Image 1 (spheres, rainbow, N blue to C red):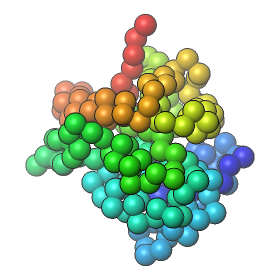
Image 2 (image 1 turned 180 degrees about the horizontal axis):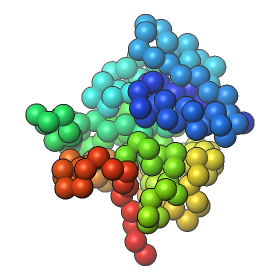
Image 3 (image 1 turned 135 degrees about the horizontal axis):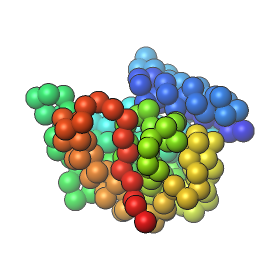
Length: 198
């Protein structure tokens, strides 16, 4: 059992919080009220960033001291949206939100994962017709192992999880968001995930 703070109470954060609670973890969800994120993160061992990616860096950098020594699981994508509200461009080309967070939070172990799928797949990967892939990027092996175990609690089989390596590899996973608008326009708003077929 872990003490987990989920920052963001939208579809992503709410979905993750409910599933992690069902898995037996103690979960606190922070909404956007002033001070809620700091209060939730203060007593947590693991903090999940499920806030909109465009504002995540500024929001989390303000919690630098509170996040020191903790694991930050970043599931967000930092994008500029197109006129239809779907992702159009990356906000950190040549880098990634996860890398920017790790640089801003040197005392925190940032792990990127679950950002290459529709939110419903994060907690129900077995509902897809083909096996999806969850990617891990981060510098701290121990933190990645903890997140690996969280993913198995969410229904991810071990063989569906791929450790890409250091935090720099997050830029590849984050670039997968550029598929999303085209996939949705082609097939509708149905659950999907990026998958590595072997």
